[in-house]
Length: 445
Image (cartoon, rainbow, N blue to C red; front, side):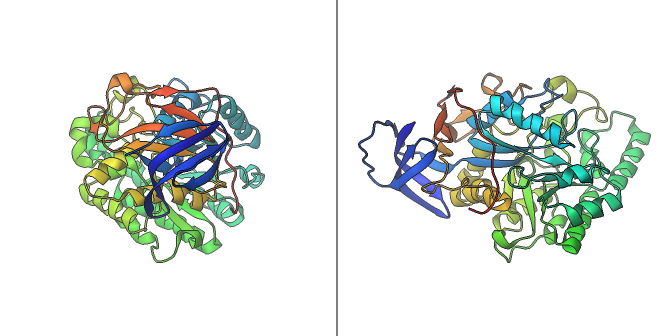
């Protein structure tokens, strides 16, 4: 496995520059113009293409085990690799819920034989599994996930004593889904009383309101400050929550960080009329003012990471009435090209995209030797053609569920090559599946 990528525009650590990259086995061996080696190698002419570090997605739901009619580790990792994602961190609300060390390790074993991308899996929290949480090794598990608001599954943790114990004792980075459950339940009952099960989707962000998000997020921040916990709040969806986060200190020194997701940057409540349940997420997509505020918070570093919260459901499930249709949608295949579309619109720079999708996840989670284009680091690399159109249509959607909220969109960029640990896994629509991804490790680089 030796490749020389010739004359790509390298996007890395705030700079864009033309360079060759020599990939040897699983590592980046050399970064320099006009690389010459005596060893045999495969040459990739990247003239006019842009080279990113592999995307690290810190929030996905690949549905295995137990929900594989929606998606599985193989199908969704394949879609991820086609979208430039070389590493993912997967959530514990599978079936059974990932609440013990044995169940956690079972997922790692599945991924080792199925995943085309590198992987890690969150340990799940419940109201009564502290003992299992404390057994988790932070060197080979990305973190702990707490549902401080109910979503897909039944993993809600709302016992305050349990939360205090977790925040005060867990050695892991704590990630949270924050929506105040009492607020959401009360709002839902009001609308069910009026509409029954068939509540118009325009009321989804009223039911799962900005107030519910802020009440829960502010509570999580207060707990983290009280116990000096390392907290990462997922999928920020409101303007109000942004004040909870600091942009005056470097990411490496932050104890409280935040993530924004593609759908909260792209859609607003004005899109429910056309997209319906296919953009029903928890937390809900809210107003265009919330969307724009979250986008600006990404740009000014109040929000640290861009991810997907990729969460596939079948077409049949999504076509049910409001109270029965599950929340979530598939995004990993299109996350990078969606952000590149914002670049074409003049809303974000390429360097900032690499920072938020590659560098920051690596720094936030302390992923060892990934997320940057550096000599000696793993060769997780993505080539993108910023002048090649990519229409999203059923024939080229790779998700097992078979649909995308972007269906009908024509992006102005396309992913051409994806390397995972030095393996050219994806090239212009074709996959080499002989080599699988490996388990991510965490600690100081």
